[in-house]
Picture: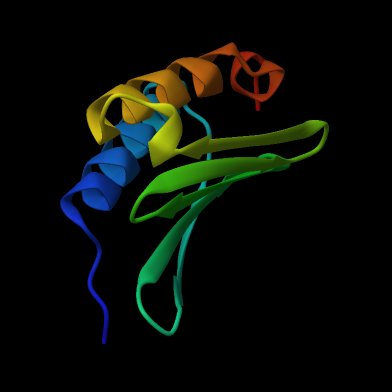
Length: 95
């Protein structure tokens, strides 16, 4: 069985912290794929898929991919993705 990468664990943890701070309910899921594992955090009408080399934010009117080749490193990708999440109306609305 595949295990999550360090990037996936950190991205997942940081996103859960963000959602918890803003008191936004979320659900966790994992999807085992042939060669790796994808983590999914769902909140309101948005899903954050975290892959070993990137992340996708989809749902509602949102569809944004963060891919490793577009960033200097995975830490920069994680920071940009979290900043993007913070800007979403779904994170600004009260539950």
